[in-house]
Each structure stands twice: as C-alpha cells, then as structure tokens.
Image (cartoon, rainbow, N blue to C red):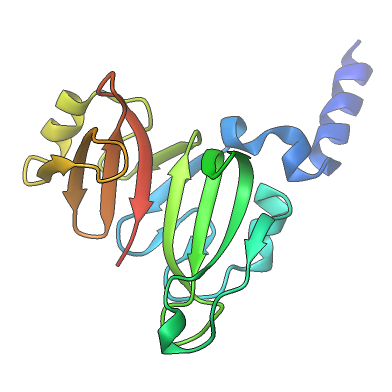
Length: 168
C-alpha cells in the first residue's frame, strides 16, 4: 500500500497543472500593487505561470501601443461565459509593452495577502485587517468593495470575499 501511495504522489507531480485543479490546491500570495503568485504587474507573464496554472485559455491579443492599454487578456483557469469562474483573468498592455500585465482578476482561488485577507473571508473581518480601506460598491455587481492601494477586494451578496483585483 505504501508503494501505491508513493507511485500515486509521483504521478500527481508530473500531471499538468490544469489536471491537478490548482485553483484549490495552491495557496497564492498576493502583494498589492505588485504581484499575485507568479504574475507581476508591468512584466510579461512568465513561462513558470503555465507550468503552475496550466495553459492559458481564451487569449485576446492586445491592440498595440499606448492606444491599446488594457485591451489584451488571457485566462488561467475556467470561465463561465464571459466571467472568470476559477482562476485568473490577466489583462495585458500597460502602455509600455503589449505583453506586460496591467491588471489581474482572481476568483475561486486560494489567494491571500500577508496581512491575512483570504478568499471567503467575511467583509467585517477584512475591514479589521484593513481599517483604512475605502468602502464602495463594485460597478459590475453592485456588491461591496474594499479598496486599498494596489488591490480591490470584491464581496458577494453574502458579504464574503469572492474576488481580488490586482492593480497599480
């Protein structure tokens, strides 16, 4: 039995990231205004992202140059129609390079900040972690949103954290 478990663990290690359902297995650090996991604002998406999060899906090439800021995108994970279900929506073209990351939307993943905010956490608890955060309403959902420098925290109708939006 011990041999079987060891073989199974070795098999899991060589599976592609998508097959391992990384959205539930990986804990992903978020540094507001800088990075989420392997993805860093202002830089191209590194090859290591595909190794960890699987091959990107639904690519949209950005419009080149400064007129095309925030026009390209790729998704790591799964979508439901036009909405990210589990994973990252990575927006491209920061005005300096068409391949540079400008914004990352994270949903349905085990993302966390060093201060302790995690997906699924209650709005009241997150407000104690970030007492200076600006409380507002998300334009798309109408649900509560907390904004700190470099990060928007979007809550669902149940007031639980459902999305992190990494930005400059």
